[in-house]
Image (cartoon, one colour):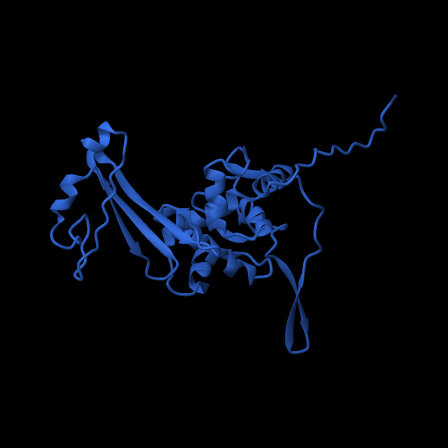
Length: 255
């Protein structure tokens, strides 16, 4: 009450007992401490990613939830999203890795799941990931997403302009990979293409789009990032002068 009257926030830090526990039961010395605060935050390491921490909030009036943070190369803790969103993004990464080895060959959902390295997701998780990748234009579905596909076998492959797609050339007993010819730079980028240009993970790129820090537009169900807007954002973040937008036309100017 004293803190509220003074416009202050009281932060209490406490360690957990060796036996652990959830919903405050892991607090050493008893979890009655939760009754003294409005919101409690449990910070826990994750099993497979040492530089990642899971924050679980418990509070009054239904306040709560889970969120993941990851330690960046410069030592800052960067938000990467809710666990369910991050898990889905990791399934997308695995699916893209499998399809990248298929040289444009169509593969069914079950075949993709079989090729994934353990731990494998559930069939439903993979289905959701593939649908979102196809919606974002990173992969293609047969039959196309624009057609009714109920009752039909779904097959998938990388989209033609995907940076992961390559032509494989068989040379004697070796298989050599040659990247596809690079297309002309497009005005709009997928979130994955923007992440590759920035040299960051796709989880962080999706979070920057979700929070509105990176400019984006929605075309139906598809999210695209304007190339010029991305360049301007980088310039602002680095404190550099922002170049004016260049408009190229085929018609000559009249004086």
